[in-house]
Image (cartoon, rainbow, N blue to C red):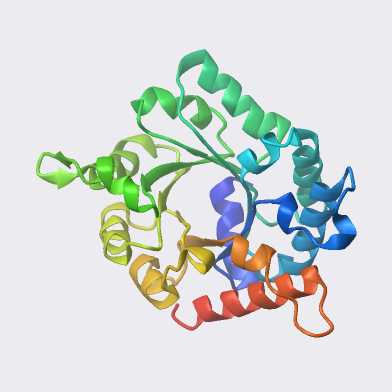
Amino acid sequence: MTFIEKLNAAWTSRNSLLCVGLDPDLKKFPAELQGRPDAIFEFCRAIIDATAEAACAFKPQIAYFAALGAEEQLERICAYLRSNYPEIPLVLDAKRGDIGATAEQYAREAFERYDADVVTVSPYMGWDSVSPYLEWKDRGVIVLCRTSNAGGSDLQFLEVDGKPLYQHVARLVAEKWNTNGQCGLVVGATFPHELAQVRAIIGDMPLLVPGVGAQGGDVEATVKSGRTAAGTGMMINSSRAILYAKPQEGEDFAAAARRVAIETRDAINRFR
């Protein structure tokens, strides 16, 4: 099954557009995990088990693991997802942006070491920075397009033939790079107008949409701007708001994450 086929199946079987981001921050871990050598794995495993029913994808952010020398725990987390939830796409958020032999090694890292279904990449170095990943025909590549941070406008709004650069990227990926149907785009929820413009350019290509939850993106505007005619087409990511949800009476951290994940999924579904 290819990445796109798996994602389409997950949208249907999970009735969800929610992507749960895995950004482990040791300072925010519950007391029972503090000081444990396997704390990152155990935290992420508990979050995965608690939120899987509400998720169409999981997205570990590699920097949170690499900064702590915890790549081995990330490998274990990816293996856990593959073994226990093989039907849910695994998005490795790495934002790689190199070329040639180096890009080939990054592709091996994503698709062999971590066995991810799809990886995020930067298009700044052009086709050469994307093509090595596309050699893996069953995997996917999600290209940065219109990011959720305010500073993204420094470059993404520069004009190319009278159009902002992010629209040029969207058209380039949709019309030239997506030859095998493997590509998607990152477009932030904090800019719903731009999200709608990208959707009009790319047709039904999938979008990874950060920016809801802790970053404050509006769920209704996001869904209405980015959905396809079928009411799918997006992996709407929430990380911190779910991972570090405040437990209510009788809840542990995983139960709190489950509650917020279900609430987020249901809020998204109201506008599909």
